[in-house]
Length: 180
Image 1 (cartoon, rainbow, N blue to C red):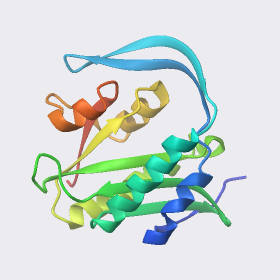
Image 2: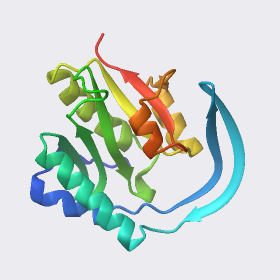
Image 3: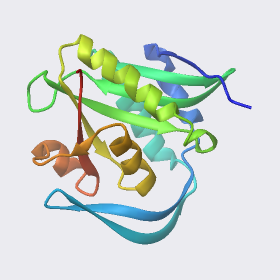
């Protein structure tokens, strides 16, 4: 039976809903980017849940994005939130042509069902309405995450934003072109 989810923009006070997302994951492979080439490596670790301090930091970050003119979207299965994406509208490299997909989290049991794609499409549509031509994505290097973005049409950034790269050097820095 197919699930039917509801999607809508989040209000500022709903940033706390991020706490309900089940981030757990068994990770067997990650990507490294070497000169814009992706190299797949075998690993073995489990992400059980959000560490409390990290979750508090991420909720604050989501709230800050929303307060500063950004947008966040949620996916619901009945009354349970199962995915969140946020768009930082402040622009990358001081411009507004590239906006950052700041967060994308989908609960464990809902991955692989198009939830992340739909949330990214909502953020991309908002970015287009703000005049952006691309989304910058600093992706967790897990195989599932990186390949999901690649399937959406993203490509490895040939020149990652220096400030964002410094913050997350292990991430795979991608760009998703918007529009026709």
